[in-house]
Length: 116
Length: 116
Image (spheres, rainbow over the protein chains, first blue to last red):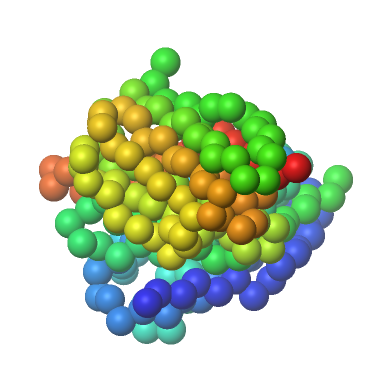
């Protein structure tokens, strides 16, 4: 079974600063996807970024980037130029690849507060 | 307007009653999922369905039931056998094609269930 661990229950960052959220996972699978989802106070889950395990290049989406270390089973999220709207719960999630449409395994989340 | 809808937004249930949570999508996605979210627990998989008329149990299926009679709909029934049903319930859907190689889950806005 796969497990996802987010070791930082809460974090805070000053507006315009950079913050890194940690995520580690345990799996024996070789083909899988990793995701970061954001859940603002509205509770709507929003995809932030995804990474295919077979890709060595780290994914980036505007101010969001990941540091994917496959051997270490680590998948951290870096948020640059933090904005007040980044305040949310952030969930790291794992999906094994079995031809598609397989469930996600989530970490317990990190609550991020961006301070003005 | 494409997307995933869940209804109702808030639901109250008396002990011993069954209730059904609705999830509908018009994204033409093949797969649909139900997750439960509790404080400090992240999201946990209840059931998922990869095709119509087929579904699989997740990690916490006891006390829940589902049906998948139509591609667009995946209702979740919380039965009286579920001992602690008060939680936030999220429905998701996904589609995977070999051509696109995308396998991302998109979430509905959720239903908050409270047992009185």
